[in-house]
Image (cartoon, rainbow, N blue to C red; front, side):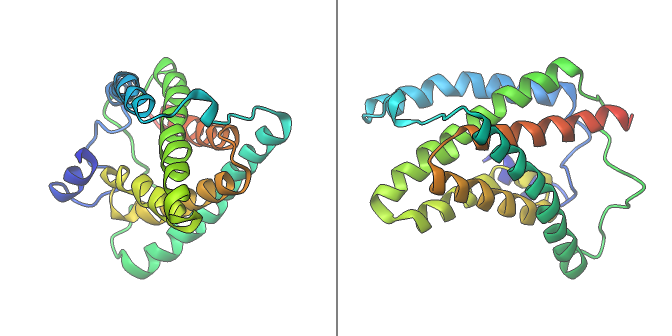
Length: 204
């Protein structure tokens, strides 16, 4: 709801305000997810979900797969955004003026978010949502709903970022549907979060 409202009441820029991705924003995200997790876990537990229902699958091949997803997201996502940007967005941000938050993130905030956020998002948006929906409505529906949810809570980044999140969501959801393991998704998400946020430090 916060993400949708930020899009509705702000201009569709790559980010909604100069505080986005700043230190305060990152700590806010981490604390919000840590506070929300026990509530969501309690709800799932009451509905019969147990830890054994979530396959982490840590291994060398799974880690390599996660690195591959991240690389694919950079390449394919970048191409998709460039195409959609050229077709639909006449006022794309200047390449020589990359976004800089007013309060750049510190390394502690970046490390925390790169650990907490990938686990939080992938457990719920793939591990829970996809398994719950696939059992009732099929894998295709589960993938599509997972992608829609993922894209919706990134709307604060503006409409121009939606093609990337849809592309990345499809990659993540397909891998989870194919292998049923969370570790590749967490690895890819952690890499993308860390690199994107670390770049903000070097832009300041």
